[in-house]
Image (tube, rainbow, N blue to C red; front, side):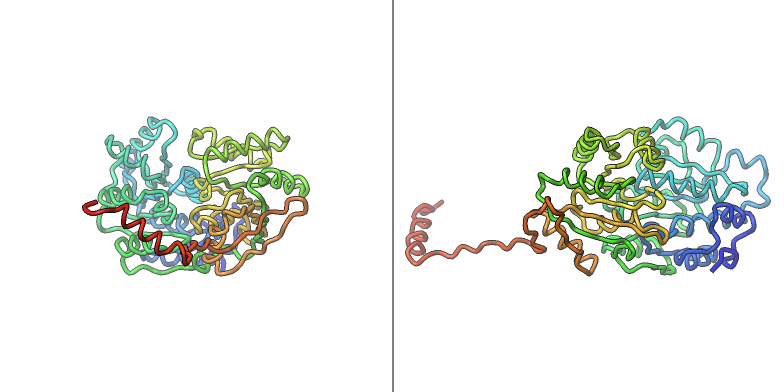
Length: 417
């Protein structure tokens, strides 16, 4: 289905065509007409399926149509009419770029606000007036608390990657923000997974929503080749170096469980002659932006990230994702490997798994609904990995110890103790 058939206006279609897109993705085909019709929407879609354009394109059209006839003197003081909430700075920046790209022929203003950078430029931008505001919850509440943003004229609310926002503990911030919005508005909620908490949030937020789910619930992108290499924990770094060098991998996104682990691994790789950098919550926004730009431009070979980077990294044709540590939350595995295999391109997701991560692997496979192929690497053979939780040992008292043990227990307790 072409974008022309979705009811988008000429100005937006011109911007879409300039980006080289002609055919809409499945989620765009279903979401865009529903949003243009004013429906609330619950969208289930994995990363890399065109989800961002699925809501930015119709929002730009709805706001451009509604803004016709606005007096010029009002434009310098206009209040935001659409609010997009995202869990991470990187995703906020990506959404902001999409709005600028597709709205370049429209008379609409947009800005992005998030923490980790100076707040004064964001205040000034908001005071000049914007139509579309993309924000991370914490910084938005800071700005509202300082009287810099008025959310009482929001017409469209988007919760992007709502499952990740809940995972990151933003539910209370989201509830505070919802109280600042007008009751009558259009609500769009996107989530890659559907937990009980997401269902509860959707039930309280959405009114007779259009349900759009274009990928199987909680499953990985099918075209991504997944493999597990069993390995002793102490040999993971050596195996990673071996895979990168022997496979001549040029662009590798590696996930570590902790910030400290990500920083340490990136420095170790760098010392081994493999250009690497880290991106995690302890990095300044400037450093995160710089490292990501260097990775996209192939100035560094390996980007080591924590799960904060599992969402919102827009990297085209990323061939390799490595789980140096398996995530504690099995759904995060889906988000991680969704960084590759985007937009129909192939990709490989490699997991380095030690014996004590067997239960984490079993939980991931339960979410996927299938076993991941396991293969040892010659020279790096690991211990046996049990794909189940270790059974608790049940003490079986011997014939001799049972009565004597019970007797001693009773005597030790004594009366009144």
